[in-house]
Image (cartoon, rainbow, N blue to C red):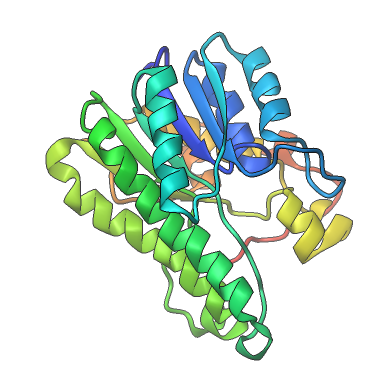
Length: 273
C-alpha cells in the first residue's frame, strides 16, 4: 500500500515512538496529525507538538497538523478527530501510541497514578478508536495500530506491577475486540511491541535513566516495523500482536545495529517478553 495522501492520526506524537512513526510515514507522503499535551518547552521532555510538527514536515511533503489534546477527556478526543478530518480530509490510519507508565507494586500505587494509566492506556485508546471508526469505514485500507504487548498470563508480569500490566493488557484486549468487530468493514486492528527497551522520555525519567537508555534501541526500529505492518491488506492482516524485530526479519532485515543507542552495550529486553 502506498502512503501517498493517506491520513494518519497519532496520539502521543510529539516525541519518542509516536514522532518516529510520524516521520517514517511522512517520508512516504502521508498526511500526519499528531496529538499531544506538550505545547511549551519542558527540560525533562523532548520538544512540543509544534517543534515535532516542524520536524515531521521537513521529512515529507504532506500536510502536518499538531493538535493539543488530552485523551482522558471525550470532548478533547472528539475535537481532535474532528480537526483531523477537517484539515486532512479523513482518517485512514489511527496509531494509539499515547500511554502512561508506573512500575509500582500494589501497595505503592496511588489512585492518581492508577487512574492516569487506565484513563490514557485503556479508556483513551478505546474512545479514540470509537471516534475514528466512522471515518476509518470510508477508507479503502484502514488500520488501527496500538502500541501494546502480546497478552501473557505469566504471573511475573502481574506480580511486579499489577496496575500497569492491567492497563497495557487492556489496550491489547481492544485490539482483539476491534479486529473481530470491524472485520466486516475491512478495518484492521493490530498491536506492535518492541523486543528491547526503547530510548524514550519514560525510560530516561521514570525507569532507568541513562543506564537503561544506553542499553536501549532508538524509536526508529518501532517506526520501521509500523511502516511494514500498515502497508499490509487490512483484510489479511488483523488481530496480530507484532514484535518489531520479527516484523523486520520477515522483511529480510537481520542487522539491527543501527538502531542501538550504544552498540557496545548489551540490550535490555522490554517488559512482557
